[in-house]
Image (cartoon, rainbow, N blue to C red; front, side):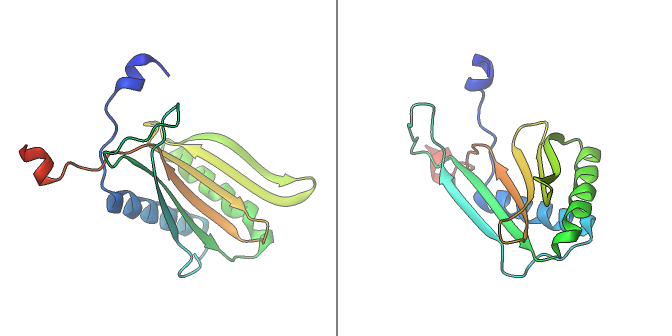
Length: 151
C-alpha cells in the first residue's frame, strides 16, 4: 500500500447500510446459483478496525463480516459456486482464489474482491457440509452524526 492510499479517507457507510448491502449481495448470489438460503442463518459481525500496531481509534470505524448458509446437497456445491463465480466476474469482481475439490473430495472455495477494495466475497463448503456465503468489508467509517458535524 502506498502512503497516499494509507492516508486516503476511509469509505463512509452506516453499519446498517453495510449489512443491508451484504444481505442483498448474498441473496443475489443465492438467486444466481439457484439455491435457497437457510432462514435465520444470517450472522452479521461488527468489529473495531485495528491498526498495524494494534491501535484502535475511538471514532466508530468498523469492519463487518456477514455470513449466511445454505443446506443444499453437497454434490450441488461445485455448480453453485461456478455460477456465483461467473456472476462475480461479470460484475467486475477479481477472482482471488477458486477450487472445486480438495484431496479428491467436493470442497468448493471461491474468494473474490471488489475493484474498489471495499468488499471481499467468499463462498465455501463448511466442515459440516453447508454452503457458506460471506461478505467482508474493509475498514469503514460511519457517517458523522448531526452533533459531530455541528461542532
